Image 1 (cartoon, rainbow, N blue to C red):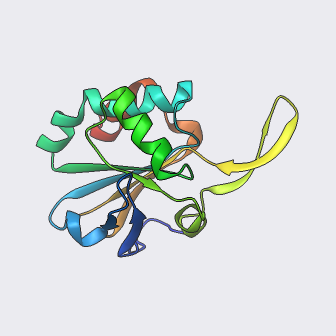
Image 2 (tube, one colour):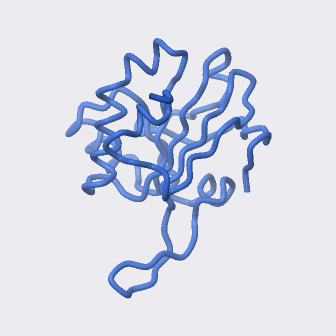
Length: 151
């Protein structure tokens, strides 16, 4: 499980095009690594579109954005195309990253228990160290970029 002060792993996974995403690609920038439950669902779409709409401001402030879910590359491509997302999405189909970051566990919806990804955002500094963790209860999907920017 990753905590504030932990060094993020070098290999983050593969994006929607099958390209390996490495932490070193973001050297000198702050990284918003956000974990979300599922492509093309209302809350996840709202969150992704908020980050999209504020992407230029995030970049101006020195951030890059990468999303992660357990959906596959095909699903990610569809999600990106449908919502015109300007940032990559990691396809963590084998649940390596969600387990490593401690954002996978038992959830409950309408009385039904199941395992899934907890909506969590990690801010990683220019040296690859986690400096902030935004927990599921504090994330507001309609204002997520503003929360990251501290507005």
